[in-house]
Amino acid sequence: MSQSLNIPSAAISRLVTYLRILEKLESQGINRTSSNDLAERAQVSAFQVRKDLAYFGRFGTRGMGYTVAVLKRELRRILGLTRPWNVVIMGMGRLGQAIAHYPGASDYEFSFVGLFDPDPSKVGMQIRNLEVMHPDHLKDFVRSHQVDMGFIAVPADRAQDVAQILVEAGVKGILNFAPVVIQPKMLERPGVEPEKEEEWEGVIVENIDFLAGMKRLAFYILNPGLRELEEVG
Amino acid sequence: MSQSLNIPSAAISRLVTYLRILEKLESQGINRTSSNDLAERAQVSAFQVRKDLAYFGRFGTRGMGYTVAVLKRELRRILGLTRPWNVVIMGMGRLGQAIAHYPGASDYEFSFVGLFDPDPSKVGMQIRNLEVMHPDHLKDFVRSHQVDMGFIAVPADRAQDVAQILVEAGVKGILNFAPVVIQPKMLERPGVEPEKEEEWEGVIVENIDFLAGMKRLAFYILNPGLRELEEVG
Image (cartoon, rainbow over all chains, first blue to last red; front, side):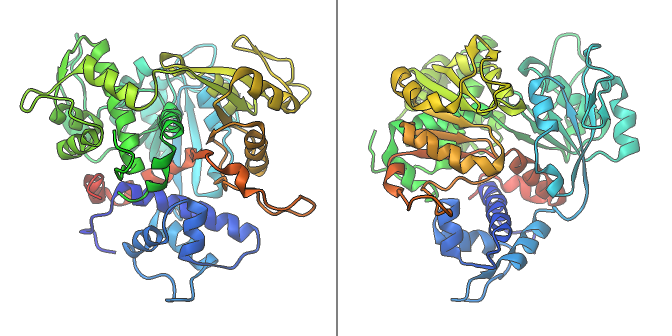
């Protein structure tokens, strides 16, 4: 796979969707699929499916479609889902707890290995065989447990600081569930030492907005004709 | 605004992000911004920002940037966030409860008006001033409360059925948090009457995958060079 290809991030999101569909097909005992079938299930065009897969090589036989198990295995490999990933969750409010219990993470090689919250009433709580820890222990924990990713499930006004704490601890991937866009740099704040942008070098931040889906729905309910054009751009 | 424009759904997602950034700027007392500033904060290119906004008209003055309050108001109007939207949540497990408590929904005109769960131990529970109801009451409730959207927070193997129940009740927008892609049609199942695809006419389904962000992170941690190309496609 060439590193020089221009792969839009939307294509990566769609690969994730295709993988989810392939897993469902496999669980239903369906062994073969096609770009048309995948397209219909993913609600995109067949052209889009073929284009997305073509970034990474040739998987099917022209006119014959794809073997579900083979394409699934290839997508898992492309997405890096064949190696273990250790994940911590920052914030053990309702959302953090819901994420900790979310089914399916263990279908891949993701493991929630540490849960953190500064609230004294939460430190020591047992959640899914893990004991909630104070963030003071994060840095040592990341090192000793080879943590790859941190999920942020704290209030919006704490999210940027918590992201900074994760980066300082050495975490390379951040998934932010707080309703705010995290800036991938140390922001200037009163009483805080100057910017340390270099620390964010190589750190990937994904901002997940619960409400974004709600806002998109509102737009499409008001503009139903535009929905069809979804994957044109 | 012309209905014949090809507006990619990714552009709608980005408008949602720009809106979130504008709200943050306004809360910080910042009155003006530019496509370069928005681009940096949204982690896309300035060209992308200008292109996304151009679908809907002209908002700034060339070389002068945008007035935060004006652009914010326009984006809210475009996204349909100036009229009230009534929302029900199906499933009052941890995830459904976390969603019901998610801050920020009320910053827009979204209201959670009904919470549903068939579990007898949950029916009657008080959550945020709402009493959890049995789904048997959904149809009457949707009619009497003019419900626009339904959120699905049930186990994956129940999600398609619950979506069908929402559609039968007259809901036009579905946001699915279960880890499965909902097919916008009645699926064939043993012992169930034949397809009623027409019922899904005009229904919008958005599938939210918690794990999708995790899988994208895995990909980008393994392929850090590709992250830069995010908004090229």
